[in-house]
Each structure stands twice: as C-alpha cells, then as structure tokens.
Image 1 (tube, rainbow, N blue to C red):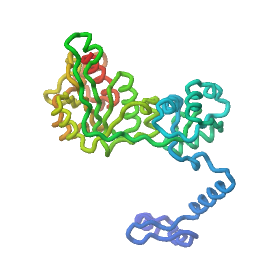
Image 2 (image 1 turned 45 degrees about the vertical axis):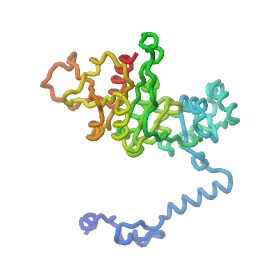
Image 3 (image 1 turned 135 degrees about the vertical axis):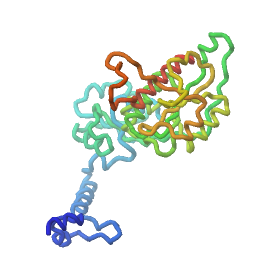
Image 4 (image 1 turned 180 degrees about the vertical axis):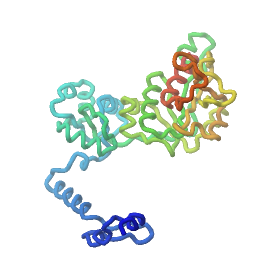
Length: 333
C-alpha cells in the first residue's frame, strides 16, 4: 500500500522508477547509482557549448571567481594571486573608469571584458557566493592559501623611552581556533587589518578556507593581510609562551578571566586567541593560554534585570574579537 511504500523510503511509483531509462537501483550497500538522463543531457549541452565557443563564464574558470569592488582592487594591488581574466558588467562606467582597477590591469597586462549582469550573477552564484553582490566586477584568479609556520617572528623591544615604544609597540597577533564561518572570518580579517594587528594565525584544518566569500566579507582585507596556518594550535601557543609572548585566551564565563577593559598596559608581544563560534576554545588550547580574558556583560538600559531570561547571552565571535583587539592594541600603544 502507499503507506508501506513511503515507510520504506521509496518513491510511490517504485516500479516506474526502475523502468525509466538511465535508472539503476542501488547496490544494496548505499553505493552510487548510474547517471540519470538529465545529467547526460547536461553534459551533452556543455560539450556543445564548448565546441561552439559558447561556454558559460563559470565553465571557463581557471581558478576561482573573486567578486566585489574592494576585493578586486586589493587583489590587483597585492599581486598575491595569479589573475587570468577580468570581467566588468556592461554599462558599469564607474568601474571601467576606476583608476586602481585600470592601473592594476595595465601592470599585469590584463584586458577587461564586459559581460552582462546576468552572466556575472550566474558566475558568482556557482562559485559559492549566492545572493552576494558582485558590484559589477569579477576576476578569475588563483586561490589563496595561508602560509604554514611553527612560531612567530622575534620582537626586538624598543629603548625605554616613551618615544621608542610609540614607534615600535609590542606586536599583537590574532589566533583563530577553528573559526569555520566565512562571514565571521571575513569580518574578523577586516577588523584586524583596520586596527593594525600584526597578523592572523588559523588552524590548518577545521577552519573556513580563504575563499572569495571571505574576501568579500573582509572588504578585500584577505588579499593583502598576512595569514598563517598551524597544524596543532595548542603546541604553537605553547611555543609562543616559551618564547616570551603573552597568550590571551578569550573565554567568557571562566573563573579568573580578566575583564579586557581592566588591561591598561601591555609591554610584551601578545597573541589573542578566539575560539570556535559554538564551542569556544578547545580544552588544550585554553590550557596553553597564559591569561584568560572576557568582554564583561554590562548592566544598563534594557539589560538591568538579572532575572530576565534570554538566549542572547554572548557576542558573535567577530564582534567580540573587535572589542578585545581594540582594548589590547590601545594598551600596547
């Protein structure tokens, strides 16, 4: 009966499915089925487009589609990617007259191709940027990868004079322990570059890749900002501590965590460690920190009832990072 068929996870017309051309039942172990008719037709259409020179922009990609005015500008200026093509939306006279884009293309010997807005929409959507504005410009560019490191560069402290510290304050690095959301990573990179952080360290695994979505969310900061990677975060932090760095772990609610606003002076090179969006700092990472800090919840308008039940009991990781970085960098300067 119909209920029994549905209960077994089958479509209602099970026999009809088997009779369709191109259909083959699974192998009994969850193995893949043969290709469907629509997949074969899709490949045939793609082959015809290639033969007739009418391939879509996505089908011609050599690297990945980096989109957005600031990411494209920064990518052209930084020259860290190999750029294959530059596409600009038809009628986007502002972009076609943008000095930074024009000079960047001239320096790299790149020609600008004008295409329709629809073509750019489809290109960005297929590249994982669905629904995100491309601002009328997209480039085909090689992917970015973080640079593996084992330790941070040595810092030479300045002379005891105040002028010496002003010219060479202790560096502040940011370490991200398994931040996986590309929007969060992009927002953090934008904040870190704006505030003057020396660099960012990410986990080699279980971290958001340095994708075009991250570049767009960072307003192009990804393209020129120093980003490193480490295989085992807690060992890296232990090495930093052994080399004389202060390692601040952001861990709200921990006993003994210092309110970041109470830190008024930093005279040693420091690393701020921010944890995963949901789980926070992992246990071994927290243990590798020399100090733990937090953004204390404040009582005030709309937040003075201690008994008020609410699910809003923490900050987004990118927001918390901005608050803490500003406090630490101010204390270091």
